[in-house]
Amino acid sequence: MDKVISCEFNMDTACVELRFADGSMISIDCTAVENEVADNMYQRSELDYLIYNDPAAYADLILNGNAETYLKTVTEYKPLD
Image 1: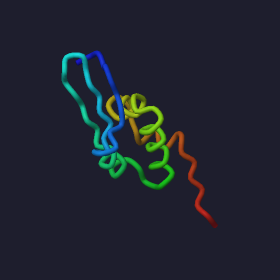
Image 2: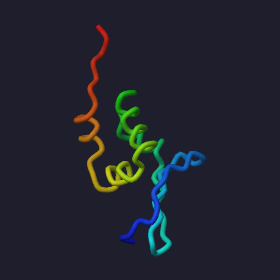
Image 3: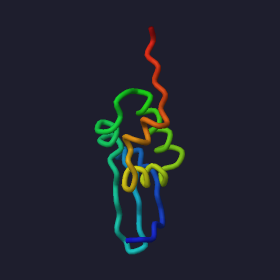
Image 4: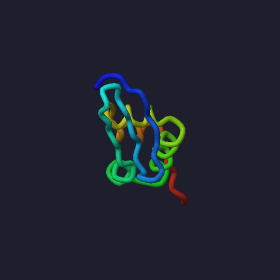
């Protein structure tokens, strides 16, 4: 399960799907991930950007990285006064 042959967002299931050379597959439920790690609409937007534009980076972040730290680093949230 080391060589990824495809990684794409499946709009019908709202999942990022990774297919491996050995025939196995991982499906990441993007809605569940957003509900778990995103605290506001800005963080959800950041995750959505990765899902649609770079699903491989999204999968790598969720499977190997720390999504909460990433979102706190890249998201700037300024509440309205």
